[in-house]
Amino acid sequence: MFSKILIANRGEIAVRIIRACKEMGISTVAVFSEADREALHVSLADESYCIGPAPVGESYLNMAAIISAAICSGAQAIHPGYGLLSENARFAALCEECNITFIGPKSETIAKTGDKDEARKTMRAAGVPVIPGCDAVADVEEAKAQAEKIGFPLLIKARAGGGGRGIRLVKEASELEAAYQNASREALSAFGDGGVYMEKYLYPAKHIEMQILCDNFGNVVCLGERECSIQRKNQKLIEECPSSAIDQKTREKMIEVATKAAKAVNYRNAGTVEFLFDRDGNFYFMEMNTRLQVEHTVTEMVTGYDLVKWQIRIAAGQKLEFSQKDVHLNGHAIECRINAENPELNFRPSCGRVTLLHVPGGPWVRFDTALYQDYFVPPYYDSMIGKLIVFAKTREEAIRKIQAALCELVIEGVDHNSELHMELLNDPEFKSGDYYTDFMAKRSR
Image (cartoon, rainbow, N blue to C red):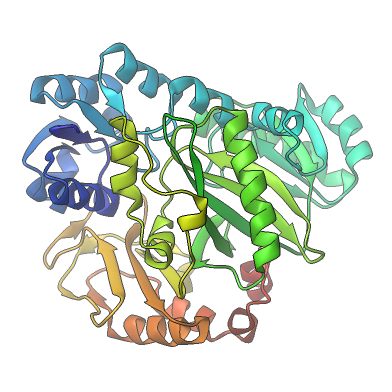
């Protein structure tokens, strides 16, 4: 086992990883920007290093500074969390070159699955069902020709990156050229790669993802599914485990396909295979995330497995101590992402000093956050300031529990979206479980 790990991230996920390390007896190293000097993860870590000014490009994406901090501190491994450098093949390769363990898959696996166009080809060859569409298109003329074959509506999608960037819905041929240019331009700006591919727009559909763990001995275990269909601009808002739409027979089929997908790319560590699931029970591979997911918490609550600890154990060369037959989904968990933004003002991001903070409590209530009273929420980073997670025996009880927890949550000094979550949880479509990825779009009409 490692004796010291550097966490190449910030906010609640850095805190989450530090806590797991403490429980495992592992020393921790934090890195921080000048804007995060007073951040909670800096205080909790055993040692910390400033790696640059506030902008992420000069700090949390500064690979040389992070690697230098790891070497100076004597850290044997780096945990990238999610976002930032977590799916950066070059960073993973740099860690490997410097004999520092990257807590995640190998750099070549990240590169192979990070190119979503290449990932589709790989999955197709492995017999994994993929959404009908085409491979990467070279220019707008080829896009027009392929669109005629695919049919409308369709999605133009960036082949690199994630987080909803570089995606455009095209409802008819007249929209194609502008959508192509916008998607390509956004992808180039966000990921340094303007390449796009196209696929049929499936609707109504659910966004279902399968959590996998893969060790270095060929063992693959799937920890069940998460329902992630409540999204705004392709960013998830509420996640559940399990999905009310998935019966045991379908779950077993999806586990089989997710396992096949992991083996097709020789996957290692924690990962997620994402699917679109239609009303007829068909499911199609969408992409593979080669990192810990924001919503890993609901899987932990329902299965009892600590995903961060297992990431660390696998990276250290340990074998999975359980197999697929040992995995059981007990009860129901729901997560609400608490973002510093104002839904009433077109989700305008908010920053400022937290003047009052009250965290909900009670059995099976969890609030993952880096907030503390008098903390200043900086304007430079992602708007998510916390994740409220609850667990109960049934979905109905879980909904009531998270509503009660939201009522108890108090964050003053910055705008946040907890009242929006209350509205969503009260929506009859959500309560029935019969909701799809167009849920938020229908509400804004």
